[in-house]
Amino acid sequence: MKILITGGAGFVGSSIGILLKQRYPHYQIFALDNLKRRGSELNLPRLKEAGIIFFHGDVRNPEDFNELPEINFIIEASAEPSVLAGINSTPDYLVNTNLSGTVNCLNFAVKKNANFIFLSTSRVYPINQIEKIIYEEKETRFNIKEKQNISGISLTGISEDFPLEGYRSIYGATKLCSEYLINEYQHFYNLKTVINRCGVLTGPWQMGKVDQGVVVLWMARHFWKQDLSYIGFNGSGKQVRDILHVNDLFELTDYQIHNIDKINGETYNVGGGKDVSVSLKELTHYCSEISGNTISINEVKENRTADISLYITDNSKVTAATGWEPKTGTKEILKNIYDWIKNNEQQLYPILK
Image (cartoon, rainbow, N blue to C red; front, side, top):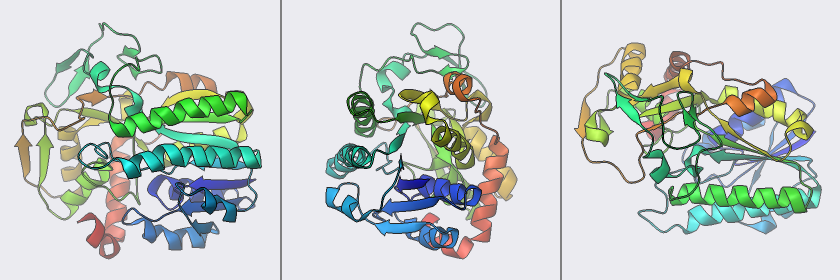
């Protein structure tokens, strides 16, 4: 097996690559990355130590693929991952990376007759449809109510049948457009593909920021005793997301690599699900409990652009097809992140603080 991971020095790409190499030492694994995101350079020694061959290149440049060796599988994990990207600034980098970059990856897959896993996002689901979800406000979080007026939403969460009509953020739009193109390549070029619409991914070696990687950001702010804010929804901190440890995503990716014929052409919602969901208010409690630190939380009542009250993944389809389900609970995820920050404090200080 010869596997190319695009975005291979990023959080998800490097994590999956290293775990694959540990489980299958005889596999050849290659990582392609432009090292644009701060902190991705810290993964280069980790990749080298794991025996992964790194190529400094950019998915936006078709010529960069000419330097790559023969491969038979691509995991497309490259992205500009910020949901705010392109809204308050030019969308050029976002569109060129998330859409044109995927096209370049697809063309390379056709050239090499390689199978293709695409890491998409729950952000393909429109904001205006999510705003129709009926929920109730509880003491620490918003909860989905049983009776709903639209399809694809239940107490379990959002399924693949959720409506796609509407606006979603430019980031989400680029990912959805990429999904449509992948379906075309799968049909007309006979590529074997699978699409994973991931919820909030997290774990060690994620360089968390306000607009992406919020779980790591939250723990880092507690670790270094810095202020945070509950933004929007009356400053309540009750907005909810499910979170998925990158190790759990790896287990699904491992299955998909080795069973691509069974799931060829499928699209799955992939996340922590209802059992591994958390509000910001609950996240604050857990981070304080684990770190031993209490910090100041500002309350900003006005909603932030493109923010939503809740998103919980319904994993029913992917679990039925593969048997996969997340194993790592919320507190275990946070303890894992805390230990990583503590053990690498000096290295992470200039990036996360």
